[in-house]
Length: 365
Image (cartoon, one colour):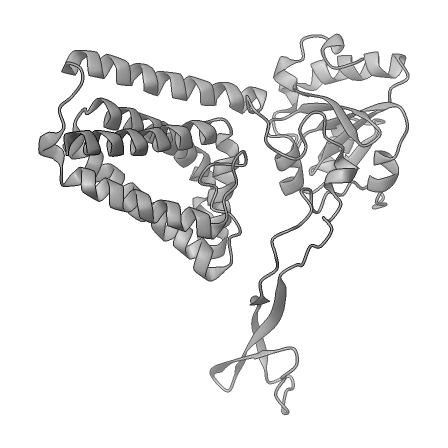
């Protein structure tokens, strides 16, 4: 029995360590996933806190996993893990049964799971943690309290330091479709045999003091100006097969509003895309960007600044080539501001965070 409980402890502990570390590789990605849940629930006020929650959650998962393996303070950590897995099961269950969230982000972008897979995983973990919870008497700590505290402190500091690094330098392992070596045009193609989800649009109106809901094909016969619009919702009618383009909604526009995405990605030769979601801290990277831009232009390499804050960028960088992009797409392509993409046609030849560009030679060919 003791061997069986030890095996369960190691299994659950390693899973939590793996889960925490793979998300610590990209804490911003987890924070964006949290925002997705909060947006669906109408809890927009929580968005500013998602990064902090992401950082703490990743540290706790790794810490709890290690504590479980070494058998330290099992009474407290088993209880905390039980509460955590109940919360995770709720999230994955909501994603599965509501259909409003396509992935839960349990293992980040490096190992995407379907809602069904995530929900089953959490149910199994829930059972295993309950077994551990009722077997505390058979679990003895591997180390002394002092050695355990030292070891766990190193785990916390190491995980926190790793996350601090990637927040400035992009993930250690880039699992996004915009990673170095990928051809963006290829990633934008819909896979053969893809069947998209089918949705129906439901409208809710207020009429004679009551809310009335109907779809686009069943408007009331007496519909007129006395119906006051309340909201429009999309209802899943038929689930697709899950096959879709890896890159969706990637669009680059000139300041005049002309879509130049396809033309740009079909350009022959090298050019430099500098992704900056916003211009809030532009003073911190403006000088280095100017140096890189000057060196690139001397080599005959066009430089285009891609930002969601196009009007502000046009004021700060007067005379520069600026393209408008969607903020969500930009923060997916480039986690940190700025991030340099050396492109050759549609292929990402180099992708480097601005903090790692010491000289123009670090990014230019």
